[in-house]
Amino acid sequence: MIIDRTHRWWAISSAVILVAAALLYIPYASSQAPKGGSWPGLAYGSAGFAMMLGAGLLGARKKVPVWRLGRAHTWMRSHVWLGLMSLPIILFHAGFAVGGGLTSVLMCLLVVVVGSGLLGTWLQHRVPARMLRDLPMETIYDQIDHVRAQLLTEADGLVADACGKLELEILTPGASPGGAARAAAHATAAALATIDRIDADESAPLREFYMGAVRPFVKRPQRAHPLADRAHATMQFATVRGLVPARFHGVVEDLEHICEEQRQLMQQSSMHTLLHGWLLVHVPLSLALLVLAVVHIVMALRY
Image (cartoon, rainbow, N blue to C red; front, side, top):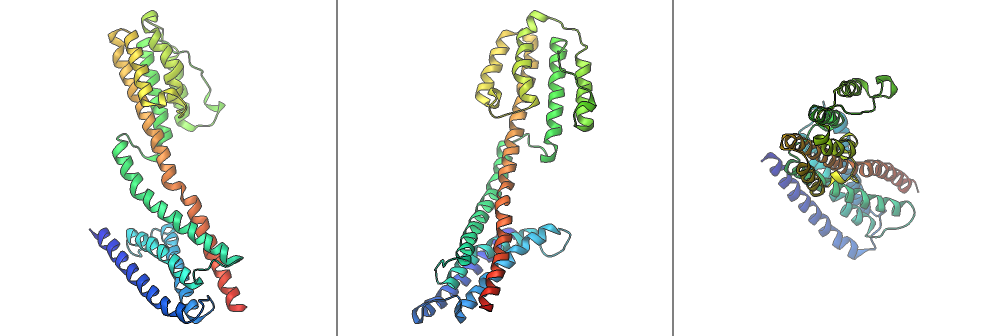
């Protein structure tokens, strides 16, 4: 409710400001050729720069979260609306002329920054809701690699219990980096490799399917892998289920569930990249815009 009130307040305030700015611009543009160096032009330019500067304060607020300077959602609304309003105000300042040299660069930067900000706002509204709806197995993003290692260990254990010895490549913990989690995985693999193989003929389809398809996907999931497609994976697991006795069906189902969790982890990683990747464009260009705007102001006042 508080967020809705804040959003509504900013929407109304922004509309009032823009309407007032437009009404003042009409007689100004009718009486003379609009120029950034005129008094009305300077007023519009100062207001636009103040809006850009105010929007940029969100970055400082997020860098120092311990500051008790209002609610985070209030800062976010301020950032969005101030940034959005700065574009038409700066257009009033420039008389809707792009100009040349530094002014054209500034105008292009402003359009890209505002556009990327709107895209980011849309992503932050849509992506979390989609993740909540489509990823019931969502985990903490920083724990994804750890969860994947656990899934591999679990899958190895399931198949070894059902089919017997697994011929796995055993590496010493010091052979490659990975810390305690990877060392534990190597130790588990070494233990599984000592189990004698049982029911070789009956379990062969499951064993071969696991070693040839399931384990590579669980160990290093990639979108190009056949099991990354849910429909194709369902068909493959159904085929294997029909080739082995009923006592192995529980293992097949567990492996299918593990592959589904891996697919959801892949989708979560992609959505996380999408959710935060736009900042790689928005933040640097926003800083460049503010710096060049200061340069533009200094040059305009000096010359």
